[in-house]
Image 1 (tube, protein in one colour):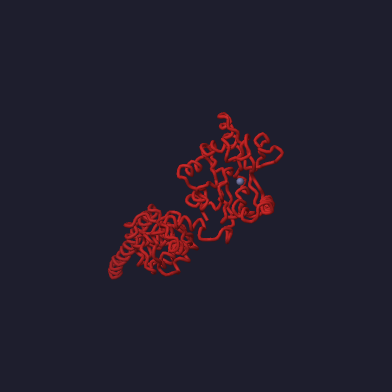
Image 2 (cartoon, protein in one colour; image 1 turned 135 degrees about the horizontal axis):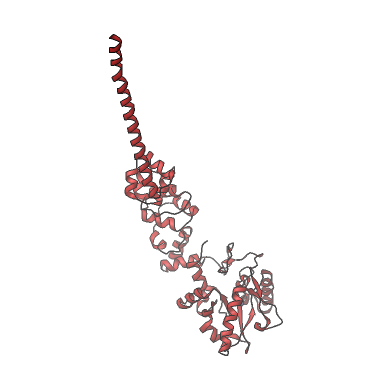
Length: 379
Ligand SMILES: [Zn+2]
């Protein structure tokens, strides 16, 4: 009996233990399922695994669920620079793929910038630009310049001083400074590294000596003003010129080519010839320095008329002024734009930019310099 009693006594205590273990397991399982649920919700919102574990660790799931899908918040939770107090600001800052994004956002918040200012700052520079900008005191006129889509963060000080000096509106200021109007011609030029057929070469942007364009093709002698010469241009230019020349020819206008690709060394020689013949002043106005000539791109041609030697007096000149853009060519140095291009009008010098860009330039009466800076400049 005694033994039995003892056994009976033991049984409920084991049962109790089993029950407790059972409850713990159930709680644990429930918690695990709950956690998986939270994780799945966050995953569905696009948060990374790293961000998710930090969100859970910081007990921020509910807040993040409320915020919803947000790349900047994701980056914040991925970053060791995350600051809890700034969460509300992070969610309003437009994301940029930059290395020190959250650290820079923190600094900019500390400098007193609002989320909208910070978005603007991030959008106008790369990681290095933003890192440098975040070190300086809060600036004025931020919105004024950076509401211009192509404004560059690293040019901020130059915008301010150009604006103070020239009293142009903000957009003109940004355009002109990006075009390096605040620098002397040929001084401190940008060395062009990324070459494409759209490349912009002018008195502030230089091609390296070794640069030779790809796809150079020889112009057939039937298209040359002087058929004893050998002239090369990029194949897309030749194709477009042939199409244009045929169209002109049908209307009894006779277009020819006088010059095309010129190497760095050719340009050196050209400069020397003109220097000896006409002097420095002429050379400065009309002859590009080596590396600064658009002819080195292979995308430019000097057009001639079959009937006369002074192109500007020819019927072909008038025809080109009316029609060249339809074939992708633009008059690169027009009379009304000497101040912008830095060149005296060259009635014969055409640049191939393709039909779409040529039409835009024609319709808006702008130069290629302005077009490039507004729409193609990635530097
Ligand atoms: Zn030319």
